[in-house]
Length: 324
Image (cartoon, rainbow, N blue to C red):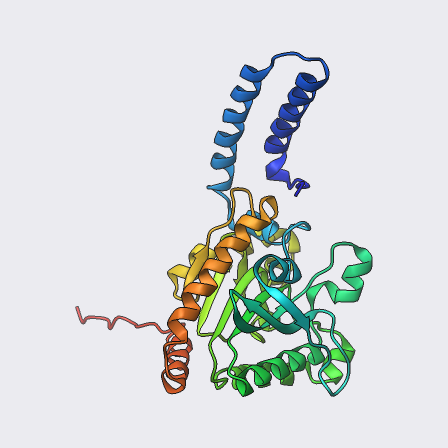
């Protein structure tokens, strides 16, 4: 997939363009430029590693929002078979920002749930930029309850800047629908594996984020608030978003260190959008690994371990001051 560049990617894209030009000359003019191409390719690989292995928190946020990054439906297509989408919440409407359905993964039936963004303006308006309404969270809960009824594991893809904050959503009970999901997901007695594949923003992400295993892609983020929102509240200046991103500890590495996620899923160098198939393969391996572990547990063990997992997040100890 051809990548459109972020600011810090410009030196890489410039080298890639030069290599493509030389390859084009080799074909059209029949000139042997193999040594120059090899030299530039080596420089390109070195440059990629220097840039992508030393990204700031804000730069990772930018990659998480990349317009060509794979979304939920892309991963479903790459990882699963026989996908049948389920629509509606049986109360109000079908929220296009939330995908739910049935599929097979290596012969294993799964219920799949995830946020879905759009590729262009028209689709983004249809998908509401991946920001779900209350009916989206109710649709997700309906799918989870169906999974529990038929004893089918659940796979979740999280990718949203946050739940939709509009008046209509508030009137229809946005906060209540997310809170209900938090409560009910703790008691859904089938394995739940969740992946943060892009943005993991606020309650919009957490509303489908209670899982036995929560994983995050290398360049995704998971946070109580967006960097821009944090900067606007703390400093009344959204331009300080890069500073806020550092303070929020929202990167995959930070979250793993704090025990919020079980695993950081490796992305291809430069981000998932540069090799969606390779990234999907890594996600699929993680699903298979964790399904094997979780399906061996009894329902009682499963729920007990899930409860312990979330209870221990944020636990800290204070050192007692010694008298001088």
